[in-house]
Image (cartoon, rainbow, N blue to C red; front, side):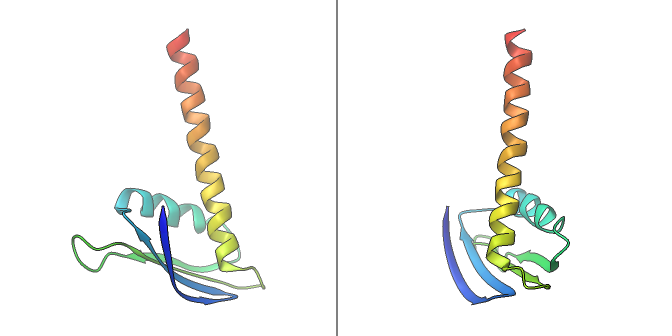
Length: 92
């Protein structure tokens, strides 16, 4: 995934995630919002064929980029679990 950081502060980040669409962005924002240190997590796709821009702000001193990385790790773990269950059912 190609990521371009537009703005970065300790408690705020704006970034573009090239090539992603609503499916991934909705899942990512929902997972980011499970972190209690998050104030705002939203994305915007300005034009039909443009890349989404993600905005995350936090409080309590937690780094916003760390929040995003942790959310991505949780999503990956959830997908791995689903794949493992599917393989187990197929093998049975």
